[in-house]
Length: 139
Image 1: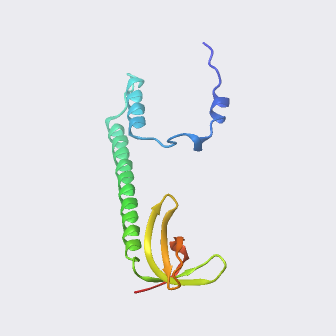
Image 2 (image 1 turned 45 degrees about the vertical axis):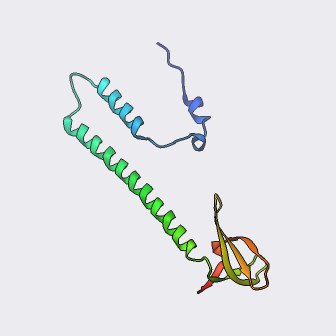
Image 3 (image 1 turned 135 degrees about the vertical axis):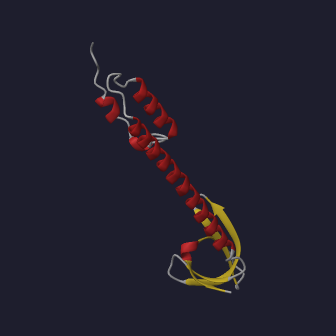
């Protein structure tokens, strides 16, 4: 029986273009079932090894859920902090090195992050102000 080499096929695939480069729950279950199906009947896998593998997977799954929860909390916290800036006077550093003082009159959430709208006392409106441009906040 001949077996064709798969090295060229694998090396041509860009790992960053794959939808999910990590192993998920379904992949683990398929590997686990394959391991059971193809084990040597004369030397079956020890039950403690099964339990160890299952415990490791459960631990990884719990860590993944905890990370997701922490990321959600961090996002909510950032949103709360941004909303707290509404109607406060802020000092904004501009691209040319100058600063502008004005009141936060709007907040916009986008894929680029949080963008503020700042209205100085001169009446002009600054839009798309990043949080990193805010250097001072006063009540």
